[in-house]
Image (tube, rainbow, N blue to C red):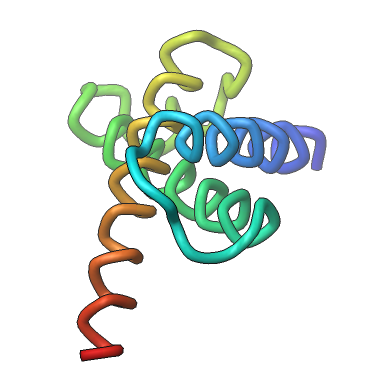
Length: 92
């Protein structure tokens, strides 16, 4: 249970950092950005664990490392960018 809470905290922090890194004005407030960051962090952590050779279990074993945080931020940036692209296409 503590590991899940740790990943939630890392995801929220990654969402905040992704909001600072992404250029331009994103839709939604801080809450929606942090939720997208959380989802992106989980997806980024899964993909990073699979390609890093450790598998999914290694990804979720230690969220409190710099590698996990950087992977979470990258996943949050990618997920936020894709989400913004999907939202802009739906308005057209």
